[in-house]
Image (cartoon, rainbow, N blue to C red; front, side, top):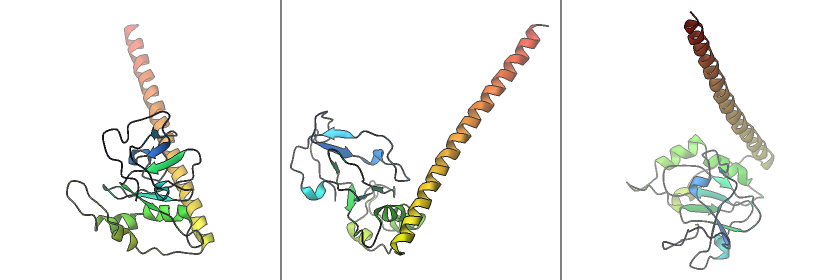
Length: 189
């Protein structure tokens, strides 16, 4: 579980803070970072070494309805997450962290967690819900291949979205020029 940060100043930005803080809004639904820099903070209470992220940790939100997961692979300053995340430390001899994160983002996992969330205003996933999730673990090489294919699918989706956006913009620019030319030709009459 992430660090419990209490008090109004617990997550106030401190440019020289000794910790970086990853928030749920920093992670996309496909498990990628939405921005390069994280909030720097200086927690008002001690943070245990178990709460500091290590390379290969998988963070998974335990509040809300999002079922995203992110593999921490960043170096630099010590980084923590708030108590709204579970910190998973997979046994790398059995599971590739990126495979675990991918699996947690699948529709299968989303359906599983949707049936187990508790609460009305803020829905919560309990640790037992996470530990009871059954994961089929193929050999490590197959896990790695799945991760590569999933990353390529994300890249393809992003490129397709970018292409569609550019195509929409180009079409609208052409239509605007067509409208302008039509108005110009009418005003010359």
